Length: 178
Image (spheres, rainbow, N blue to C red):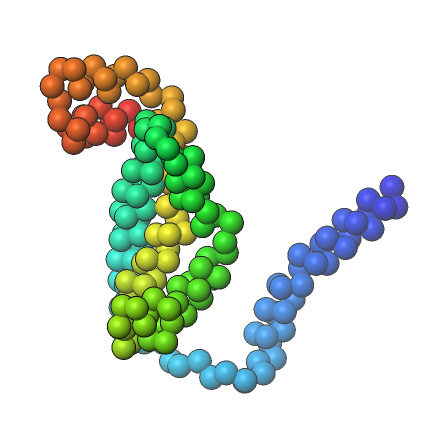
């Protein structure tokens, strides 16, 4: 139909706009911003920092997300539903908004910055890692809680009855099943 063809044509135009813009910027550079020259040493250092950040965020997100999922699926206590909802709350916030809020809150004149007596801006490796962990942990939690719900409780209870310590249950019963 004519409406479908018009809609498809409009969608193709909208999707191709960024590509057209990139092509025009490459052919006719405006020169508003002079990018610094990229040296191999700077590139290698940036790649190393990025990989280290990725490993740190992955490890902490896995630990926290699995812990929250385990609490969500295995423990029932007053406030467990509230804790579950609060732990996935970062999913509804864009990560840049979370980053800006934490940066301003932990700045020397921010609420948390004043309370903690900070003198320096809240930026660098560890603040970036914190923000990324807060943003990624809910994804891990959702996946792990789905996996833990499929794992029967009686397996953990049997290990407990046989005298296994909690850490051993986690390492030898729960984690292999995930």
